[in-house]
Image (tube, rainbow, N blue to C red):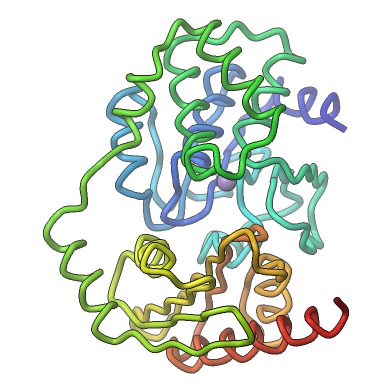
Length: 313
Ligand SMILES: [Mn+2]
């Protein structure tokens, strides 16, 4: 199927969409495609994450916020598990071509759905570029390397193949480890520090057998807040954010937790008429509704799933 995708990338006016609040794996992947193939515009709903802004500044990547999909002949969707992460853009998309590495979901109207559950989407893109005989430039190298390093949680979720691709990229694009790290490392600014501490103040926790489940609410930075709760000692963290009538809930877990959060969020998304998905250890659900109620739904579901798993052991 990769050959078909390469064929599709070679001609026509193309829009490559990434998920809202796009991380370096999403932006890096889209940027690499835009460099390797002609006539590619990168688009996102609402905007990109803070660390992606750094990558954009460094590489000069152009990302259009809220583009009009009707202006393009072909729509690609990269690093995005469900159409709810495309916000309003999702309505205007016909027959998209999906390239994704999250847990498989139902992209019903997709023209092609290339799915490979690699630790990062950047690794799939690397494979595409190799197949297309594209010579990796420094900026494309930096983009893919930052995607890999962030999505694998500094290699914690990487496998041997990821590391091989990572070293090939360092070599081919003549990039040092220091350059990659300084691109992805950042200290939180004041608003993020305060938001995280507030999430700490609102923190609640429960235990299921030996697992500790912590959950909280935050006004922004729900991704870093869920990581922070894991650093504090929780095995599973669930953090919700209310934004007007919309909610986002992020769940993260340590490796030892026997629940695939991506599949769980997909399930919750379908049950509640919202959209969910992700990886085993990091996933999210978003849509219209009450964030706190959704946090409770997620917490209950995690507990049920752990209990069920433990019964099977
Ligand atoms: Mn990704």
